[in-house]
Image (tube, rainbow over all chains, first blue to last red; front, side):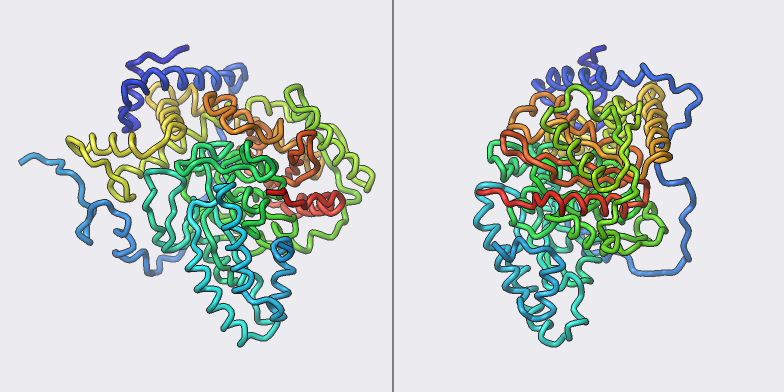
Length: 96
Length: 487
């Protein structure tokens, strides 16, 4: 199986990664190779087998609801590319 | 150099008896870093000034402490893989996207080491976001293998392993998602321990594949690995996957009493494609153990051949979700020119991530996307069950498994960078251990004819690090391969 150019662009869009023209063909090749590689799993019959999403037994981890300190504001915003100290600032998303 | 060859317990003894000052030890490590870095590139950030300041304070504090009041790591400098948060120190994950990120808090493991008096000298190089097997995908350039500077140190914890091997670190913490502690340890001739999933808190470790990631020590000796594991293990309210299981004193397991243990040699790990010299060295370890009263039998892990494929569905899927957070809003890097919010995301990620990270995010995005989830992700999780059951069956018969760590010794820089799948296959013997959540340790067991270190891997039952540490310590002491490469 080989991914189409449109499929690669669709995946990149979902992943929010812009691809340069020369990257599209390169990733088309490489991603197709990787998908062909992992398709070996289809040899195995997994009918009736439960998936193992985690090796930790699924159980609720509960704790007492005690108020405590969390990361202070100045620490929270110290790595923000744009902030006013109270909010993360992003490009405008609503039109007037 | 003599000082840098000492293990952590010896250094602790010297310090608590006031025969060695923390500042002397810190200076010795910093000097070694300075001597070796131009050749190795094992560090992304060296926090020399901070370390000197802390050492000076430690010198003064030490004068006021009586011998038995000195904590286990007091004044001992350590290095940390650069995907683990150390407060107020830059953490890049070897990515352009985090080039200027400064950690706002300590990871739980760092907090625990700090409470025992450890001093941090720097952050080690790695593959970008720990995605790779050679440390070549680092935005800050590859780390070199101290045994042969034309070869890779393995990865992703290649900086940690190279530094410990060259003695520019006394010990380091790495992370292991598919072999990232054990494989570089094998390539660099040092000890690497991946604890059981849940043994060590991952709070403050940059998430890559959350159902597989685990922090563990990279050290000169098995004793040092046990020494650090004692300190970093245990439940943490900040990591809901950390296990409420009591932590034994791992040092007590290192008693050499291997007689009566049952070992398994999984036949699928000694197949064609494994370098005969690697095979030979690993089988010699089995013989050595047999001579010392360990019963060795062949076992089968029938689905081993599907482990890499399973991993390369599950890990990228989890990564595609975990790395969604690098969107130009909270984590330092934002593209300069963009039309709107979505365009800002797309350009930030296009400019900030390297090729391997992009590949994995896209593969993960694809296998989780509508219409493909059952065929890829769900299928892989079912195969994971089979791999897990395979180990369960083997551990019904034996106490631990003996395998090679890697099919070959360290490869040349650039040898596999153009072929992702060839690179992926270098983790073929370590990956299944993560899928099953088991503990595994890599110990040097010989050299090939090129003079490169060969590693043996011991795999244990979940939460039974003691058995593999016992065996690894015994083998390490018998073989005495704790040698330093000439640089």
